[in-house]
Amino acid sequence: MQFPEGFLWGVATSAYQIEGAWAEDGRTPSIWDTFSHTPGRTKNGATGDVACDHYHRWRDDVALMAELGIQAYRFSVSWPRILPEGRGKVNQKGLDFYSRLVDALLEAGIIPFVTLYHWELPQVLQDAGGWPERDTAAAFAELADVTSRALGDRVTHWITHNEPWCTSLLSHQVGVHAPGWRDWHAALRAAHTVLWSHGLAVAHIRANAPDAEVGIAINFEPATPASPSPEDYHAARLWDGYYFRWFVNALYGRRYPADMVHYYTQQGYLPHGLDFVQTGDMETIAAPLDFFGVNYYTRHIAQAGESLDAHRSVPNPGAEYTAMGWEVHPDSFYRLLNRLYFEYGMGKIYITENGCSYLDFPHDQKRIEYLRGHLTAVYRAIQNGVPIAGYLQWSFMDNYEWAEGYTQRFGIVYVDYETQQRLPKDSAFWYRDVIKSGKLNSNFLKKDAD
Image 1 (tube, rainbow, N blue to C red):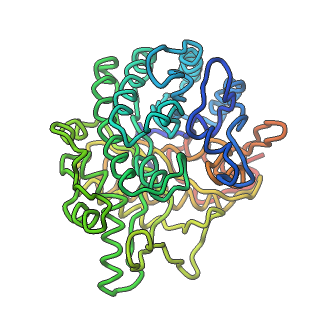
Image 2: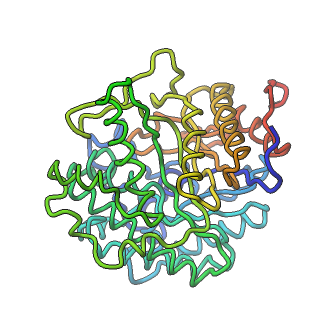
Image 3: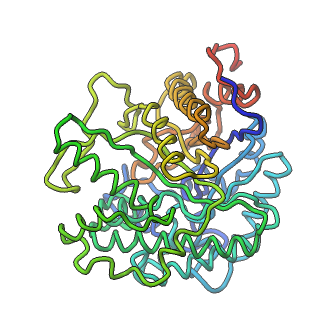
């Protein structure tokens, strides 16, 4: 399976998960600092205070990427490192850190993909109401302006938001991510503010880096009915509206799906309808994109419940599951990629996250099998005409996995958190060979890693 010439191979991380240095050089707390320091919120009380200490070890990390032949590196900036008060005065030390990182990547021949928001809202903005409040969108637009002015002369690929569903619903309705709310109305308001802020940010990036590509990264859990029953098919459609269509429809000018507006209103989640949507918002949200970022890990097997709150993905007996308890299902990835292109007509797609957590080291054969299966899905979609331009594996190295703390390992590079030593796993060498050849290896032998 030979991938097209020019197909971009890379890896991805995010700031809070790897940087550490949480209170150094002018950085102020984010909502994740507050959340992780609150007892009972994360596994074993783990925080990102040190994480992978990338803030001090970034030169070695870039060098390791280069050794592995990585062509692109997606990373996020820490909002409170750049704008410690959320907006206003710029912390030059914070900007300088990312500027040095970008320079080092370019010197190593690695293309930087900069994500502006990967869940690090400054706590000071949360104290003022957070994402449910429209003022937060204006502050985010300022972050986009400041960052793209500083880096736009060198960074050619920008991602506004990572996974708006997580920023809004997982964090404000389900409540397992910061700030840990369980309020449907606030979650839906937050989803709108995030999407609106995306459109505002696109305008700033285009003004400051006119030759750059701008996109957004959306996460998906494609829904499959648990049975042929009408109830389970209805449950799958609800999940699709909740997780997929609410975000993608708005981004592609189709507004919020009417069936979901009706459902949310019936349930009392939108007591006054879409009263938080103002004139011009939807047009701003639907700003033209240069690429669409797809994050995929697993699917959702939908079984009917009394409401969306009661819907849970039911297990698939006999299936392979990762250490996160997520089913391995490449065919859902393949179907998703086809749907996105043939239903929405996207001009260019990057796989901005795809990977798995397994605890095996150094011989992580299950990760290799996962990656091979999902890259096969990408290849098949490309053969159908889906314009996929690159693949950014999650994650370059083991890191802080949010509420799961350090209990999960998604990296192709092992991190010893006691010594901060980086040790490539078999999957890193396998991926290196895939990048070098531009095609999927049929086998992986131990000698290839030696």
